[in-house]
Image (cartoon, rainbow, N blue to C red; front, top):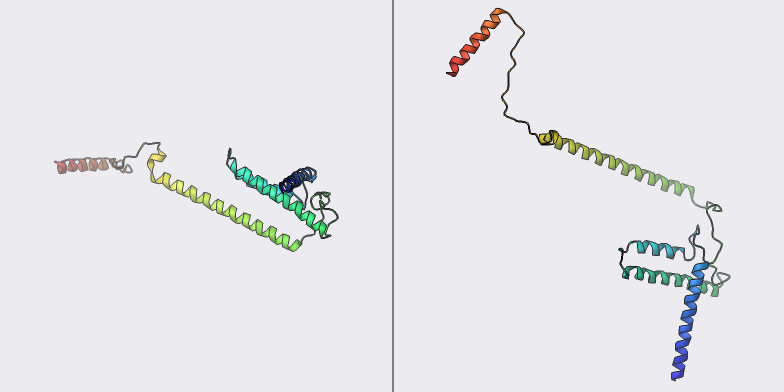
Length: 196
């Protein structure tokens, strides 16, 4: 019985090693850039996005996403094997070893009306955001102007304006005759008598 378990252990270990070697080989041979993003490409893109969220120097976070990426790649291989068994593809690796479709050979098969509607919606969204930014800049500018005008310290580099300075009345110098001169002298004398 012990011999059976030893054989089972080595058999399972051999399958695991073979699968890991096979997966690494397929990952090396598989195309890295494809217009349709087939094969392992979605797994790799998701792995990169997930690892970018990890903090610098953190060990557990990248290892967790590396394990998720390994499971994703294994699922692609098992999916290809299952499709081959069902007769949906010619070989177990047909879904991840293929001739990559480049941008130059791309033929447009989309819905023009839907794509134009999407572009129009994106354009309107962009314009709305630009208007909101411009309005926010104007509000900020107006607010700063109000603050500057309401506080003389900001305008005069810390020098405040004295609010209780005596107001000097300008005398009317339109009439320069002797009579006007005498009237001013009399008015000054009356003011001095009233002050006493």
